[in-house]
Length: 306
Image 1 (cartoon, one colour):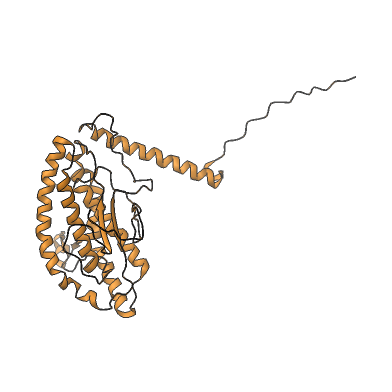
Image 2: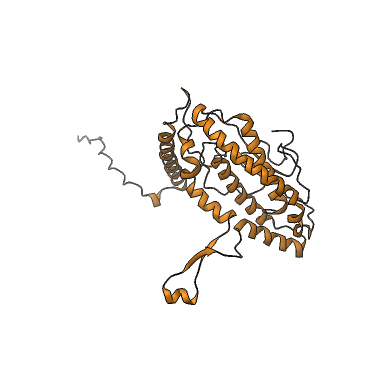
């Protein structure tokens, strides 16, 4: 009687699954793992610079948060659109804002001085003096309220208050106070590390510079690099377009408002970083909409002092 061999032959190995053949869930998981590795690599760069400054024992060096992951940034900007905007008032808001602009001229001069003082304080103590921090955040908050009212969003007809503190105004800006700041990063972050963002901010909020060529330039083989007399910042141009649409239709285009808030949010995050208020690198991310992703209570304008 024959007895069959019941032993199974070894199973041949499965061929490796290519990236393109993987399931959508696996592709998303692998992409997330790559983003984490890239974020960790940038964190090592930040840590190597921060190591020279010396954080307190047991304190983790600041990481390059929010560059690839959707992490809320500790500088938060919000703005809520007035549902009953006047069709024509935006045409004269720049004139009505002149008293604010005069005050802000002196406030920004003071902000430059206090930032220099804070630079030395951070270098020697690794801390940003709380009174200087609150003042500088207040100046940025005041600037954003005036800008939201008259220039970069024209999102409300309510006149901005003359105060550094937080109010129930529909536009607000705030920065979380840092317990410790790196002595090493303070030497390079406001000018060297911020260069990529400063180039972007120059396009969003600064006047453009163009090559101007004339007939004699072509004859001589040279061109002139100069500021265009009628150049305009991208944010100002978009706000003007929103105003024209409001003038003729009586309605503010919501998608354009969301875009303007995202662009302004990018600018103010960079300003807070350059002003030494945070060590976290600003994300290359356009968070559009009236509410900042890091807002504790979205949809409700803040009240009370900062």
